[in-house]
Image 1: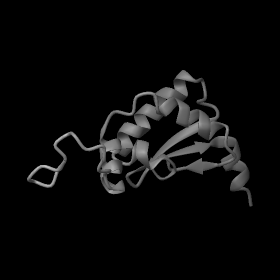
Image 2 (image 1 turned 60 degrees about the vertical axis):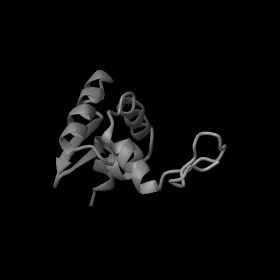
Image 3 (image 1 turned 30 degrees about the horizontal axis):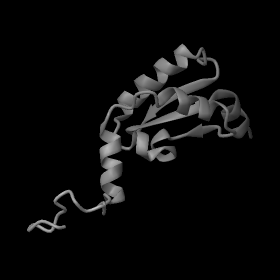
Amino acid sequence: MAGTNGRSNGTSTELKGLPPELIKALMGKGRARGVYGPRLKQFAESDEAAINPRESWPLEFEGKTALAMTQSFRKHIADADLEDVIQVVSHDGECYLVHKERAAIATQD
């Protein structure tokens, strides 16, 4: 039964979902534990030459600063011994992951 303010008093089984914008804001502001490694692996195994992680995985990275993302991806790249394979680039307030070999092929004239 709804209370006087129109909200459930706990006896109803109906749930009120959050709007997508609020979900993105909530997900982006928290710490992304356990996200960088799997996303780095996903990128490394993909066919893409370069990506913007914030655009590829908005729920995980929407609220993160480019600096925080750059530092975390660099740490995970070093931990995975992928420094010769993947480069992290911070440019115009964004963080990008670049697969060096695929980028070289994609940009050949």
